[in-house]
Image 1: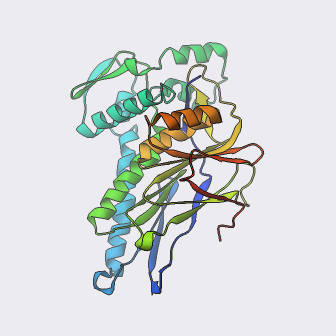
Image 2: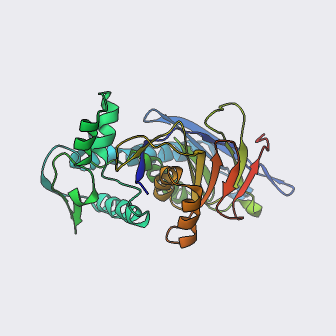
Image 3: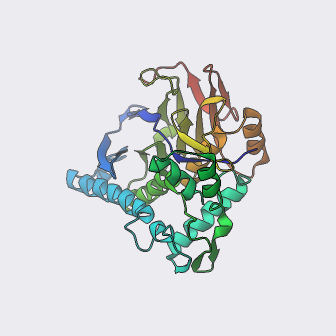
Length: 329
């Protein structure tokens, strides 16, 4: 099996509805939308479960802005302007970097995800993805050269330091940035007394907490060939959902070429944003049989919906609530 990774995933999933009532008791919902780093960020949560805890408009504005700022702050970790983040490591130097605990934890976790996926997720692939971003001609020679600068052994971790032994090696965290950022936004909401929320950013939808009466969020899933008609509806809660389809940029890290998948769309459900983001392109490049084998191994906890080119649906287990040809409205 060749290894795969995404450098940029197109958003093909959106929150279309959620509970507005619980039994006979109406629940007032609050929605906030903003543009963060050029991408749409959306947040929905109950104003209160009872009159005693009702939030004022001023309080909601503070919470909304704090959540959006948390997304922006988290994404700064990957910015070239951040002298203490990923951008600094990605400079063309041989060096030992003294890094923050947060950055060390991020590297350790993404490296563990790579191990769990048998190397299919490769975080040190920046030289290859940069080649595509440059707009230069993608020749066999250029890809071969870029591939010599990939692999986790080139950027290693030693206690509180990150050791880079190949000056051209680069981390590529674009594929997991949404899940990483939404986790920070959810933490801010929790600190501010929000017990349940739905957050969307780029190709990722996240929920945290438990809605009243165990109702679930409905998410509309589109196939790559249609941006008007829903293929079906996925229901879930307390999870992170990521999609990947034929419009997504998924490359094979062993060849540097774009993956040609037999699937149209893959949807991953996980309780972790980074894992959900990393797995979506990995599963997109695998056969249905190999996806099921990975699921059955229980090394990684996830669920998935796989839609093939004919529109047929396959799920990893009966626990996945996916309704094909059901209107999301």
